[in-house]
Length: 228
Image (cartoon, rainbow, N blue to C red):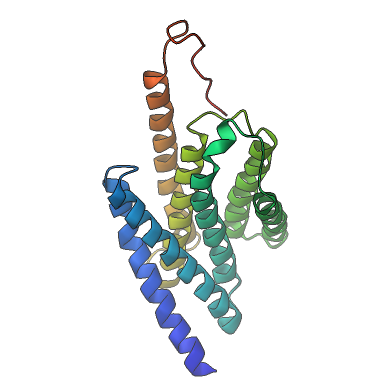
């Protein structure tokens, strides 16, 4: 059994290493192009492997933090990946049962995480649980509004999911390896730095939509409103 956990640990490290360096490459290349899709898929599967191996490792070393960050990172990676397939929700109100179940289960888990964090006074757990609960809640609200999404909503979700998954992975690395950073800053600095980057990308996408949208009256219909 010890051999299994040793191999699991090295697989987790290798997958995390790949994810750390692939994510910036996916952001740097032209969005939507073959290179972006290729590196994005590599990042997604690296996060899946890192997350699942972290789940197994957390059980072995009895680390609640590792367990929660693994769940958060996996959920956000799936959220970001699934968003690519949800472009039709801008005009089609049919949401797959799988998406409802994933978002509902995520909301339940993250609300429970927030409750645990508040009860124990654990700030990092509360922060991650809160971000996850807000994300899952917005997903459910978005699914209820399917058919009325803006054409860029899937892209906003894609950015949020993948970047949040990356932030969680960096947080796990910081908390377990960067011992010179004191608690709770070792847990929180990736979120403090990463959230503004996500906000910047969202603002850029929205500005591009406004810039490229046809003016009212030129195409026979008003410019599309952005989904909040």
